[in-house]
Length: 301
Image (tube, rainbow, N blue to C red; front, side):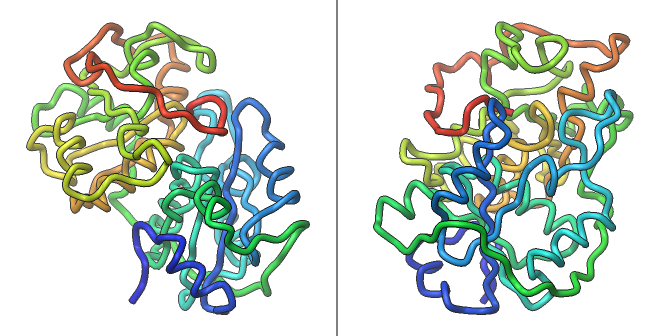
């Protein structure tokens, strides 16, 4: 049986020597773009290869398409082939703890038609806390020929977002921290605020203090506080640049609310054009007193 949302440390530990499992380290830090790679070389889950958010999991930036645009499908296929992934491989992605970067690879693989991908629940922090096997230095896997193509209906464009923003049968869900959503703080993008009509569900609400995901029922209840009774396939997730929004998409899938879509350009694309409207201030979803998740990951995307 394939793992398609989360995998726990015990299950992964039982497959470390399994050639049908590909483990990918996605650790990253927006404040220090070499942090993840340095830490991978210093110590990682045995057998893991490293995926860099900018080089491997993002495309070229134009200045108007966001900070982490989607990679071109051909380039992504080449990267996945280099990681030793094809249709018969179970992929496990992990990062420092809460899945904020690993979920990007999870979503990209599903977008390319590869459903056998899961995020390690609790990430490297939980793995090392349990004394499970690690290795140092760079590792690689034998290349395979990844065959896949982007699936229709999983993303929405900036034009589609503008058209959907105020429709009551659709919901735009912003994954950023509440203070960024409200426009009180913005240290990364051009202007503070959020897309008009959006609601806030900070991705940190999906995990417990140690970075493991909540059980499906409380997870679903928390997500439904933000989305209401909107059909899951009418939910559009965004964040700062289309990275941590994928953690909300993973949470939705794990909670049985599959089918939501990603706005890849997210706030960094939307706010790049001064002609696009912005909203500031609180909504009910943003006004709750939500503790900020502590992580080694630096800035929130």
